[in-house]
Image 1: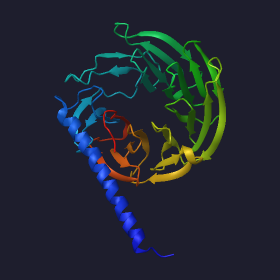
Image 2 (image 1 turned 90 degrees about the horizontal axis):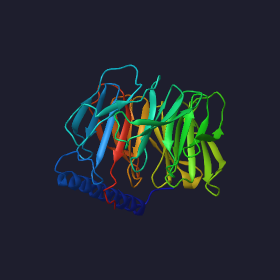
Image 3 (image 1 turned 60 degrees about the vertical axis):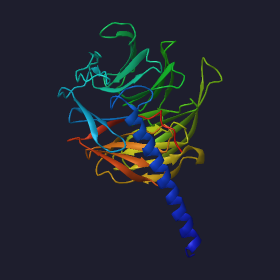
Image 4 (image 1 turned 120 degrees about the vertical axis):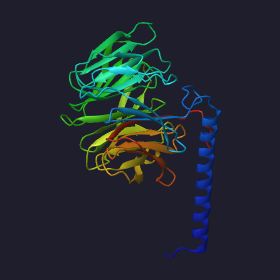
Length: 341
């Protein structure tokens, strides 16, 4: 079958639409940045893009220009047993507090939705909850769950009352903070380290990925608050190498998987996890990713020292963030203020 002039015209029109949408997106980011008194004012109206790397730096980026606007250096340490909290509204490059008391590397952290407490998870097998509003420095340790195996990832459930962890033994566990206990343990492949876990923003679904490149999906039901049902939905091979991160999009329609095979793959949750895109361009392992608020863009971080901004309509890199001197392994994006086309 040949491609007629109509196909070419439609494709051209589609590209023009995409380009126009990208221009609107960047114009809105530009407007947000110009409206701010300081380039990195941490409020709900800021666009904040941050990466961290093995060069012991945290870098803040202007998402529009790709320029690194601020760099925070932290002590060179092989062991990361504590958490450092920084005030990004301040020009002070020193942490306002450091705490943790873990005996292994901390692999995951996160805040309660209203900032009342935060959690830390570690290779030492402990999941800890810290009261960040107690006025104490360091924050008060209020819970200390023992997992029994090194924890590789931990995320907050949408209900803000449960945490989900995955570990080196291959387990996915749900921890009920009110009951002070583990309510569910899932072991899809015993002995195969489970690397990453993600929970849908509406609490309807949970996804976990392991070192063999396998992805597992469960449906989560809240019909009984005391014992919610966790139902297996599907399992599929996403990569032929380690999966380092899996992330569900804010609108829950997409799943991103980052891999040691240098690619990021985008899967449709609405089409039985059909492969939608393969994002190729990174030269080494891809460690982390973050979706934009409208689920139309993705930022990735790689061992090739570079972070990339991808638009997911066509799967193209539209910005690169160059500045790390070693692997970029972590990325965070807050662009909730932007109104998308």
